[in-house]
Image (cartoon, rainbow, N blue to C red):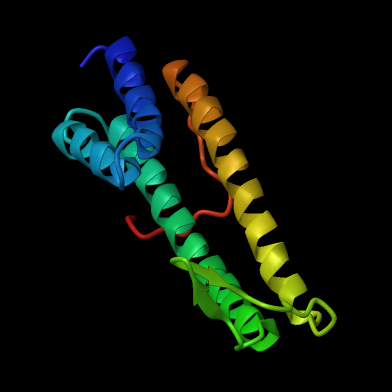
Length: 151
């Protein structure tokens, strides 16, 4: 396989992860398809494909952990601080007297988890673009904080 073609395929594997913004789990589906059809043609494509898929799987694990932290804390905080004298009035659910005074520091952990998730997604976007540029030039690229699921 020609070197430029290998580089383009490796860059395409990285760029295909951006399909997550249009297709659910496109960040895993399309890189796996492109990598699995081209991994035997070049060791460079195989290595960069594994790196990309490992990064996306790592981000999925990190997102699940952050969700397991943030979602229960937010739900418990709302339940504890909402008055249960909620009533239905003209098909609207109304909460009387939501008490902001009892919100404790645990909610700060949930807010930090949400902020960390936002920063993680922004960093992911820029890392994908950077990885695509590096691999299109034939340079090896290793994503940071990646768990090696595929070796």
